[in-house]
Image (cartoon, rainbow, N blue to C red):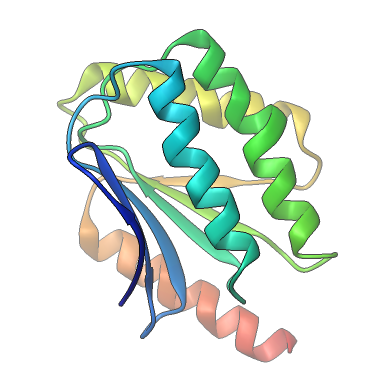
Length: 146
């Protein structure tokens, strides 16, 4: 594991075994400024590595401001996609179905991104086994395409 950032709210790290960049929230994001600080680190980390897969573990994120929800499909995701220079970008959200506010925020981000970014799909998972299977499938696709 290579850690890029960690505080009491979230961490950003690369799982070097699967080559997946993770953003994991530990508690609710208190403000748009904090959201930008954490997600700017995520974008910078993504640009510094050779991965095509990002997983956002938003189970404890809480509800995001509308401004934060808009920032992801308008700034974060296009920045990641541009960095890949035509390679496929794979993105997943890890959700807790019982955390309704995080689920609503995540769904709003997903809907905006899929509406505004051509050929983009964001997958959502509520179990680790489903997420891990998808990551393995994506990694198999990436290996075949190289």
